[in-house]
Length: 211
Image 1 (spheres, rainbow, N blue to C red):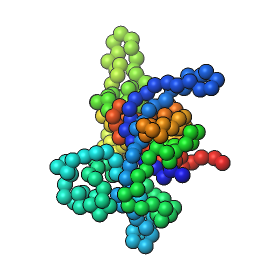
Image 2 (image 1 turned 90 degrees about the vertical axis):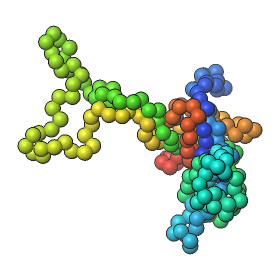
Image 3 (image 1 turned 60 degrees about the vertical axis):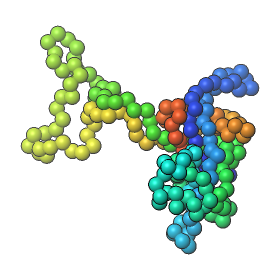
Image 4 (image 1 turned 135 degrees about the horizontal axis):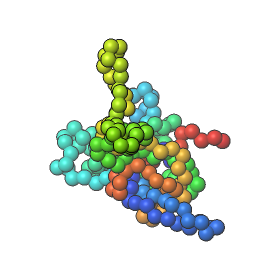
């Protein structure tokens, strides 16, 4: 059973199922990842494994990260991520985690950084309603009142206003793995996932699945 894997989004395409229906899929290069650290309840208080993904040169890494990777005998990697496991005894340092750990029909949760869309206003960012478009109106796309002047006399943090849109960590839950290409370490996942082509994504078995 898969614990999780790091991958790179390659893009979207479509395939056809046995009934001839077109299925939109996202192609992800999943792994191979290497186990760079194993955490146990005795040493760290919980069980987890750390995976490394993406080739890198020694020049691109600092000395603490190179020293950390040398303990597992791993080659320099660009990305590291930790996944919780029930028992860390099933893994060993230097072990390779590939797309074979997933299977067709499995539901997964995918996390990644969404595409940045720059500075956006109220309507685009939060789906606010615009103002009147009649002649003489000066409130077409303005924010309007944002808070009382006396109490609290300020704007509360977190109020929905204009600002940067996208470029945030997003998790899409319960997406289906349509096909696994073990030879090329590819996962074909139904639907869209965060990020642009080439973006780093994390794939893990879906947490909330009804039996």
